[in-house]
Length: 144
Image 1 (cartoon, one colour):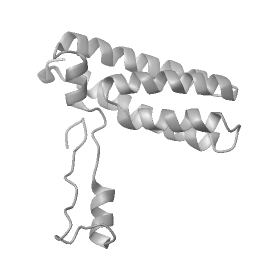
Image 2 (cartoon, helix red, strand yellow):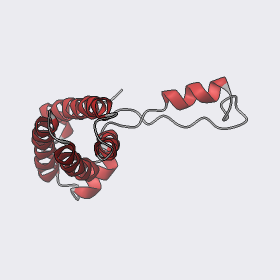
Image 3 (cartoon, helix red, strand yellow):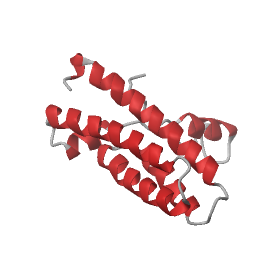
Image 4 (cartoon, one colour):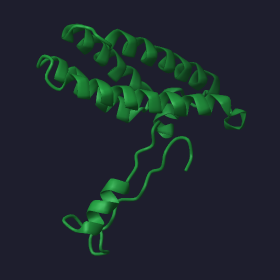
């Protein structure tokens, strides 16, 4: 598996992997989105490896900063930081981070219920993305 994750093909109905079957459920659970959508990142940086590297470095710093602001903050500040992180994650194709940040933003508007779980999910997704980005930036063979 590459540092970017694996895109597994969805199971096709009629081959033991259709919806409603155990094989279909297993195939769905095994389908893994890449942690960073490489094609999206390349499109957003116009294929410029130097710009890609800079954008990834900025994302890692911003993710750490936003997670620091979220810790112990009032729900309105949590929502603002989560919203910022949603946009940043979308910009580099970190879809899991974007989805977790969106969930946190929604949870923060309902008060404290579910907030801790949403924060934990975003923290995990952000750490995962940051680790993958760190590995990518440390790999000179990648060209970034």
